[in-house]
Amino acid sequence: MTTASPSTHARAYFGDFGAALRYWRAKRGYSQLHLSTVSAVSQRHISFLESGRAQPSRELILKLGVALDVPLRQRNIMLLAAGFAPAYQERTLSDPELAAVRQALDFMLAQQAPYPALVVDRLWKLQLHNAPAARLFGWLLDLPAGQPIPGNGALNVLKLMLDPDGLRRYLVNGDAVCADALHWIQREAMGDGPCSEATALLAELAALPGIDAIGAASHAPNLDRRALPFLPLTIRKDGVELNLFTTITTMGTPHDVTVHELRLESFFPADDASKQWFIAKNVA
Image (cartoon, rainbow, N blue to C red; front, side, top):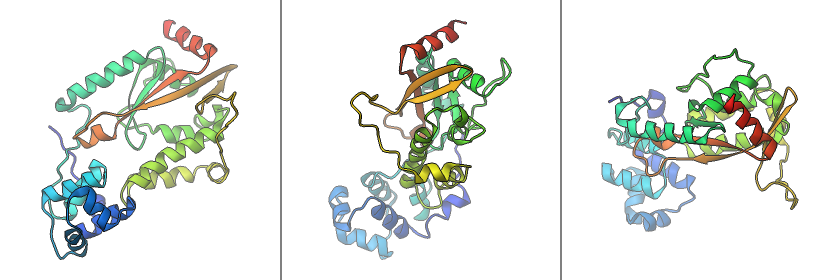
């Protein structure tokens, strides 16, 4: 079994547990009274915890983490701030204890054929993909036939999409798609703690050429009754135009940091021409 140790950077998020509790309570917009109500912990005790006049037990920290809907990674950081060891392990997908999870992901990826599917972490680093996704990436990136698509977090899908030298040049509706992608990582940053990797990634993406204009522009939804009920991903390359939409699947009731942060993104054709293109590629 492999467990990742929290970094020194993570330990520096909060000086003490009181600061961590104040941060997450404010993040959720809870008063001490409201947190008392949803956690069944007295308002007086919450006040004492935040001021440092009382010290929490490990069980109380986990209870408040649930009440505040704090991500598992950040619950571990709250525990560290109070002097406790992390409660939630962070394994890799190659860990034998995650074999059942890996089998489930492999099954879902295979079932998505002939359409692409990816497994990414919360920072959109590519972990797994199916064969149609490899073919799509290979075509878009002009990779030599048979060259593997790097997995295990070596490729960041959002960076690849927003980079003007990456996939963005083939996105017909690139501004709207890139704005939506930025919103995804912005939500991760908002749900994360201070000094988080998600916040750093958001800043890195915002610094890419042309992204400042995309972020500043208003991308209001198309409310025309004839419009598609979702934001399509429209790709055009070599005379081929593909119209796609995606779904995001997460793992239910996770008790591991890695499992909690995984997202399976499945691509579906938005029109018959796109459907036939993927079917033909899968048969070839």
